Image (cartoon, rainbow, N blue to C red; front, side):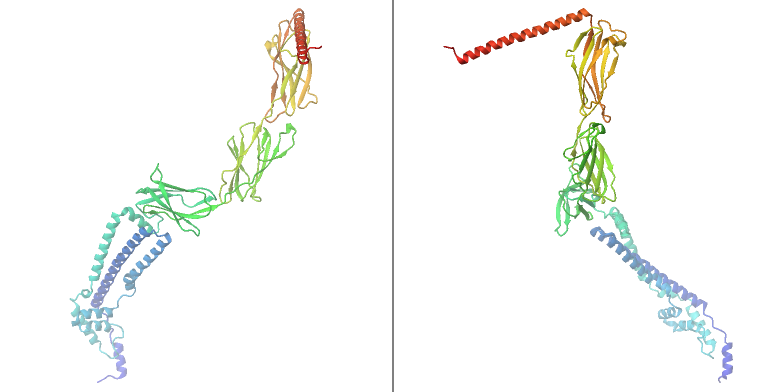
Length: 569
């Protein structure tokens, strides 16, 4: 007999809720944790196997092919993606979507058919609203109690297949051991390859390792290029230099070890005219490809030279050819030249005195070269220009322009009178001294220098002459009254005198010129008369000799005439 609807609703409202079985819930939770642990272990083992193998393959390929850093970066990203895909599939995804109780119950019932759907029913009947209205809860409670009794001694985890995990764990351990053993055995190579796999900027290890190479170069057109390399490890006696030009077939040239050092190799390429790239191979070592850029070197056109003579010469500035630079010491040489390229810097090299002077470069006129130098008294033999363009290319060895230094000669002074080097004079006599002084440009000062043996122990004295309007020549007769000496000169006194002249060279001078020294000796009047008589006698003797020679010449001439004409009839 069924209850009326009002009584049925009241019975439903009064039915107590069916609580899930703590025993079943705990067993299913343990089963879920076991399943997740197995999947996590499989994921970790599989990740280790795949990533170690991929890493080993990459390291071997890198050792063979020498991957660029970009290629290694791409391979690193691929491995990182695979690593994360495996972890996500076996570790993270199961935890994000763990198996529900109903699914676990079905798996347990498949392993234990004797449960006859009781486990799934016990799980479902404990859910809110599982019983239909008016159903008696005693049935559900009875089912749960029976299920608890049947499963009390059951191990839900027995049906979980752990063999794949064990296989993967064994395989992972084997791979890890093999990888560790191989890495240790080849650590000299493997450490560097592992660093490269993680994008470190190290070279691929080889039996022969290139430790130095010339690298990228910028050279001047027409230059010789020296390409060098140094190695470690096995030392071959020769290697290969591969030269590649634009639009040309690669050239393989031999590069030899130096006789003084077998670890160094060098090859010179002469007269380079265009860009090229090169690579050096030594045993199993292969260098990167390096470019060589060929650019014209900066040069200077023949300079324009202007010579500014020293002011004291009175000469005007004049233009000079760079091939005709015979310059007076103390002159200033102005140099102007134009470069073939815009310049960053310029240097004036002074040859002979080994001096270098940096020249200012005007940014508004970067090709103009201006220099000025003073000509020293000696040492300078020429000059040249060293240039550097705005790309850092320096000029080739420049032309050395020769400079010949003309010294300002000192004045030439000579005594024209008296003619004899030694004169005998009385103390009241007047010594007439004639002299002639000449100079290249202008005379600055002329003085009569003398020493008197009886005055101040022969100290040097000076009488300066009035030059007047003279410039580069000065001729004069000076009457020197010996009676003016105070105290008076005594007999036997010796006067040594000479002419000394200075030019007006205020740059490298002054130049000083001196005449020969002459002697004036103070004697008595009788000694002077004897000297005059002797000189007169010498003069008469000379005249007699001249007369005799003239007579002999006349006789010889007459005889010669008679011989030519013959006897007269």
